[in-house]
Image 1: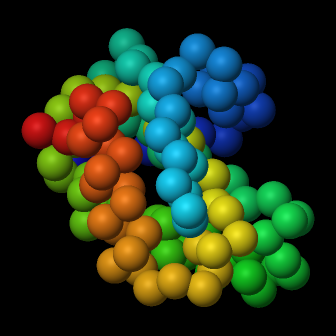
Image 2 (image 1 turned 60 degrees about the vertical axis):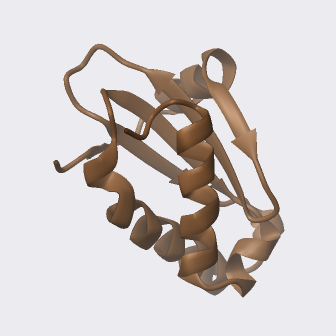
Image 3 (image 1 turned 90 degrees about the horizontal axis):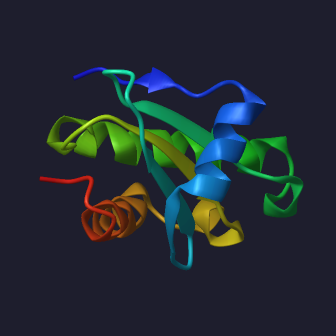
Length: 110
């Protein structure tokens, strides 16, 4: 199942304020059920993370980890992943493990 992307600021805000969240050392996950018939994903990394190279690496690692879990999602959600400073220093497998725990706790994985 191919997921869409969150692009609008209002969609990110809706996930932040109405969604449920889980946090760990290198990732924060916000999850909100949607009625659109597709899962949409947004990835953010603020300036606290570092320069453009570090922010892009963090987003790339998160995107790669999500691609591994995408087929196991149970339902249609708006998901926002927020990178943390440690995201730039860890391997994709670590982010994948934390993402799996977050999505399972939030009820998005089968």
